[in-house]
Image (tube, rainbow over all chains, first blue to last red; front, side, top):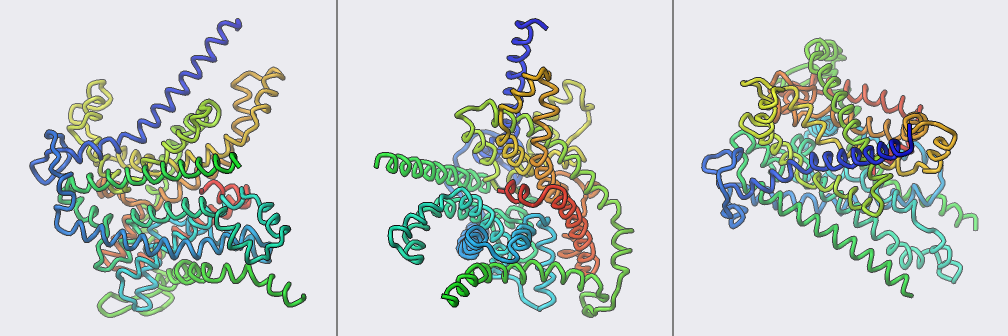
Length: 273
Length: 288
């Protein structure tokens, strides 16, 4: 093959690769465009499947459907409570797994990972089986139990990934400069942990807020946002659901942007010192 | 001094205790409890009693073999499709994206901050009979005049592929990103063609990511019932649909528990085989 030909082939291969990447990203975003677009759909019947014209009326009244606001409030409360508990338990576990060498570390690692490798339908069904065997009535607190159960593992994995990249020299330096173990832990460790905590907390909150399968098994008569959508899916999902989904998406994007800006600012301040 | 060191040795166990306790009580015990429930006999009205009733298992497998096999088939197809779609994407981000890397990675994750159910219902709109995908496929003749996508196997598999794609793309990226570009250069310097270097250097080095991604996609896919429910019909129902309805609608707890225990067991075997072959480290790392 001549040099010119092989160069031409190399550049067209790169173009193909880029086109594939763009195509894959478009595929990922296609349903999101639809969700956002149909929050503005002026649908006349119960269904929101065909475009019938532009309107802002759903955005002006995002909770204008029976039961929706109650479901969203429940979801926020569930996500907040289960995120806090999972963050506390998970961070402690991650610290133990990264900072300490002890007997049984490998099996513990594997055990913590197992819930992530179990299908949700099994997790949900098994937990409901336990509640039935023990005669526990399902409701708000059984959902919290379920959400903490799967979120603990996510928190451990996320924080561990951050801690593994974290410089233990800073803590050693603090101790060399006369700080005792406890002072180091309170003054040096938290700022180093903060980005990992933020990431893990955001992930846990999102997973809890969006969980349908496990919640569906253990909810009793308590409603959540995903349970509301599932119930509505048969009779046609109201466009208000699209409005709320769009709002949530943009809230998450804003949080991410703030997080990135904050970390950049911190890096710049550190460099300026 | 001795007692101080003794206390220090206790620290990791104290840190672990509450979390492990939570996982034992609400994850490990329920999983084993499934076995107990599955060996019971009775009805919801009369109550259930433990009788070593193994017939739940033979019955479950005979009656729902079709759904079991279908789950495996759909999940395997979706896993392969996800690999085909995301490998070039991950490769592009790892090697060609330059300073856009982190931004593009973020773009992979962002769609999944929209509710799972809302996303899947959006696919109902996209694949519906009067949607643009169906009419486009009809125009080019890939779909007959009265052909449809919604409520078919194609729609269910497409939905599963979509919903679990990040579980494939992110581990792939992690393993590709680690590859030292000099290795590929060395191969081409030693007169390997581009294709040969890809086949014999890049792919083997990306194998941990390919395996981890496949497992992390296959596991949730095989237990999924939402896509079959929303995008398919009862002819596309998977084992998750059966477990769900046995538990929540028909309340046949022993059979439901037997099915769910069988699924757990099958996946546990797969994970242990995987861990033996490649170690859990790559898997837990890739899960982030």
